[in-house]
Image (tube, rainbow, N blue to C red; front, side):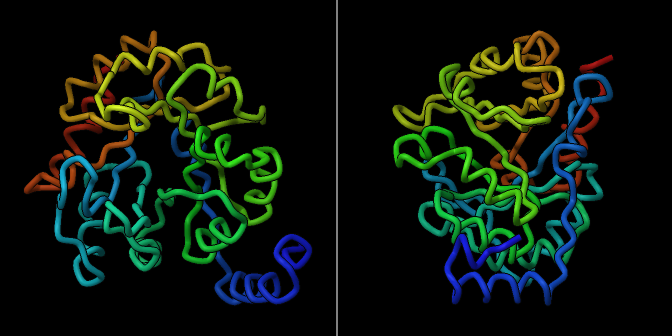
Length: 263
């Protein structure tokens, strides 16, 4: 890894030193989610203080986030997503850092990332994967192949988000990809369409298919699994978990339903 070539001598050397000192151990996100379609749909529980459509979901701070992580773990989640975007979501990189201290589960950093500096922050603060919004990268003319290669140098997996079949087709090929189909039309009217998962049903066998946004009840997992022709591996759930009085019980409800659905 030569971050000084990619980031310049000053920024690159700082990032190299931070990564070296912290000796960050990366967890395999795709490995934790693979074969959910056979063994039980996996749950990625999202720590999400607020949303643009719902406002504040839960009061989260550095003092209570560790307890939230423990509840998520004891509920049986396979991974954790952390909102790090402060605008509209009230997220924070400090939240990511504290979650990393509190769990050995794979962590997804969820925000708007399109520069090497963004990815470097995700790595330094402890993420194992980062959200790669295909449409955002395309509109900003980011070279997706180069971006992915840089993330791999940092030990980060790409967690691709797509809203259309065209976006799926533009994801660079690799040995195993994580592809999340967003059920919310975030670029237009913010409406939820669970049937959007159908665009991912023909992904290569080795890819991990995830459904995210608007999953409000355990019964939705039945619908999503059916609409994906039995292809769904995992679900990413934030709002309904954050709104729950008992996070552990809510996560467990989704996990158990995920096992039941694939039988």
